[in-house]
Length: 396
Image (cartoon, rainbow, N blue to C red):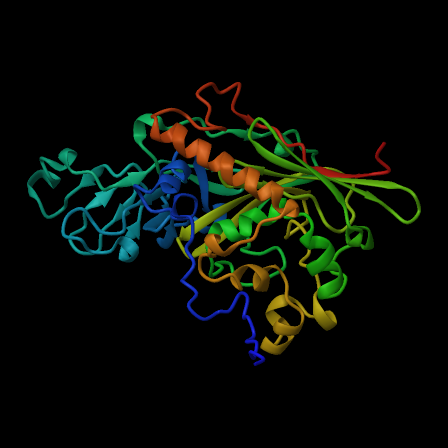
């Protein structure tokens, strides 16, 4: 008697267990491993022009904060709830010496010191005992940087070599854009899904060159030979493209611990990079980016946003056009709020991001042991970020 064979459903979705993310390198609140690593560095939290005499509510690493600039020009970053009775300082009034609460008029300077209590005898005899929780902030490179970590571990705010020594007809411009291709300033997925894109070199020849049409210069469409290597501060990807005319196009991108990216211009600008970008988690499932770059004195943007489908910018496209012509945002947000790392099938083209994840894990261990991670300096002369990234046409 012949036995009827039954089909075998290899890889059936039935019974599949939910995937999981790696919390150590994705979650960013206080007390989490990555949250503590990120807080060991000075991080950009706003454009310099956004720190004004009008209080601004911002969110960084899952914390809500009030940003302001007092009338003497000093930036401040404080907890949103007044230390007196908890009223939000978003309704405060900024004055010469700080920010005044709308409820009972307590005045706090940019370091949280209570300098006036107008409802109390002698303007508050014990006001020096009250401190509004605050973070140190500094202006640099057209951005406002904050240090949100343990006070005793505060490092020096480093200089960026590529942004120093600019010409008289140039300036440093700061920008906030979640995706270089467009989209909202705050993107709705975990920060690492975007950040790793700097080392995901092969997607350029697929997503940006063939799948959704040529979005960069034709040379970028050539499939590269890639070498990934460790640097003093992170991981770099060296991409070699042999062009149809026989020229060698060398492109170097970098990812610096823990959240700094250096990606060269994709529209043909030759030479070393003259900009740097920080990927800033807003919380576990949202992020933004801040970029500082060298531009001409008359420039209002670091570079023009690329035109996508049918001459449209990203925000002008319909949902159907986004589906048919996806870009970075669609590819990364499409992974979900936090991608399921347990469901990944990593291959040779993913070597760079694997190297960086392992580097992050090593830095988490360094911080857990009470030591300084990569890129934290105590000596001002040594506190310099040196970049190797750039486009080099006709390289030898």
